[in-house]
Length: 181
Image 1 (cartoon, rainbow, N blue to C red):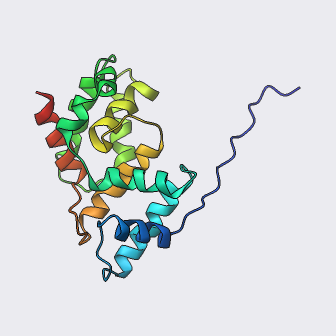
Image 2 (cartoon, rainbow, N blue to C red; image 1 turned 30 degrees about the horizontal axis):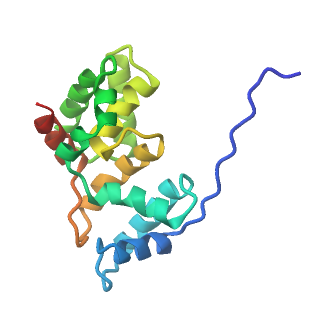
């Protein structure tokens, strides 16, 4: 009998960029006439990053709403937020994240990995203790891995002319830190 764990199967992705674009238009985040190669590419990327984490269209729309609606004061009023912030090292993670995001570089997948590695190297925090505060500060909810994918879509979305402006990762961490005090 092998002691290896079986590999987790990747859940199927039931959604395409077209589905994301429809949700954006239905929710008023994009105008009906809004179309460009950049928007289409962003919608495809959103479908790839988020689609395998949801089972229905409503859940996909809920994840997308985290991109378009962010209010740090409201985030900090939730009991779950206080449970995350009370964890060992959580506020230190947020301080380090803020410092690293303030350099002005856009947050993409590579930059996110760099930030995570810098925080790991300068602390003894791993796993949930590291990721929950980051997700809370940038996605507005601690959640699971799907919230990391939301973070990866933020800065790219800020460059697109959505009907609802998207707050960058930098703007979110500034708002979060201001509300935290």
